[in-house]
Length: 625
Image 1 (cartoon, rainbow, N blue to C red):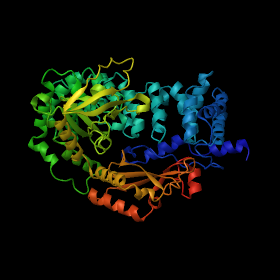
Image 2 (tube, rainbow, N blue to C red; image 1 turned 45 degrees about the vertical axis):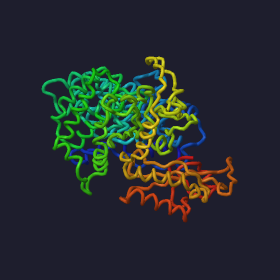
Image 3 (cartoon, helix red, strand yellow; image 1 turned 60 degrees about the vertical axis):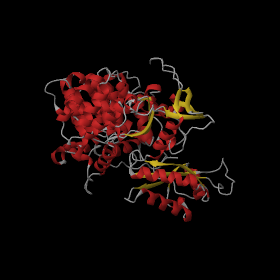
Image 4 (tube, one colour; image 1 turned 60 degrees about the horizontal axis):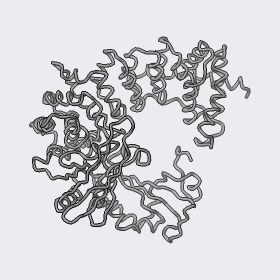
């Protein structure tokens, strides 16, 4: 087939714009599935090339740039569009190539902007492949004009295009209504860019949408939440009289997101209006309807005021405690307390069931001992679990003299998981000093450090000293020297024992994981007899009701002849919650491993395709090399 015939075959297919327009027009009431429409099937390449073909990212960028650069200023845009299809088709444009297309188009010099804009319009209106349309979107992100808005908005309805389309719409200052319309349809990851674009606008329509639309946690991280609060002047809005109750609930969501540990610092401490918003919200909280969503917002705020970063805001004496009393008064009122009783119906949404169960487990936690002056122990160890609708971390928190230690002394990430600190016995004090990692940076210790302390018993006391942590960043206030803490040994031992035995925070799948970990620590031969080594067990971030067990297959391990340079594979066994009590479930899993090789029912998730072939296991489809 000649080049011209190939080009004709490609461009004779319906355009992706026409496909998106037709799909949307066929939907009842103009609705479509969250996340947009899947792309229509494209002709498979004559010869499949693996996603990772040994080509470096730099080489790939150069290849894509060499293919596109001569075409962007061509006066014959029809010919140039055909060549874009052909050349990218020869590159077998897959996900990695599509990312390179976006990166290259954003940086290539455009000697003739008029010709490049015309090519971008032809590709967005008539392009038939994802790669070619991606070139068009990239060009219009740099050169688009108001007349391009309808086309960009329609293409954003296709999966994979929303992020680039939003970038283009933002660059050409599209009407806020066009962006808000898209927010109803695109995926969380793509919605993040749209929310950022709206937060940067100083217009009433954008502010109204940001103040009243509940946004999924994946679309609003801690820093974005702070920027939204600052952009809409949240501290002023929540003190208005009267206040829209949707705005009041949104204020709570934004405070919760700002206090999230999914960032390098608690953004709530960088928000100048945080104290005022807390004050106004708690004062009017009783006006909110008693719903699961509102209960979860108020309970999350209480948890953070009790033992999280918001505890450290510049509160006047006694004011934080008064706010906690106010939240407790609202949440214990009969109409609100009713939400903590009873089980959701079997037909209830799983997310709703998880949230209701979390509320029942957590409802009293922030309203327990709150201050050394009221008789709380000098050291208090608690496990904090965030709202399942806004999954964050399960962290161990330390209150010393009533103040949260980790956010005050470290501030770059949450306390470590209870399985690491409590189930392991790491916090127990002996005469032999032991260094313990209390918290790790959000990104990992190797990147931004961790908080370490040495724990030792000294007669009638337990001493925490010899702290290790990274220095403060240049743009942050210098950290004060951490003191040596001396705890009464008997009280310390009692508190550690209480925390180790308290599993009231755990849900069934997490309890199953804890029991499996204990069982495999006690009986490592259950895995080693099958040439396997235990990796980790826990609950999936996106599927908290699934217990996930990971182990590594090393041939020769059982006989003590493991070849560290030889082939190996990682296996993962997913165990969805089936309603069986955790202790029964864990015992059943351990019993199965006594008699059956777990590699026969777990799935390969790591290693390499070559190792899988050598060891005789199928490599999972779509996982690259």
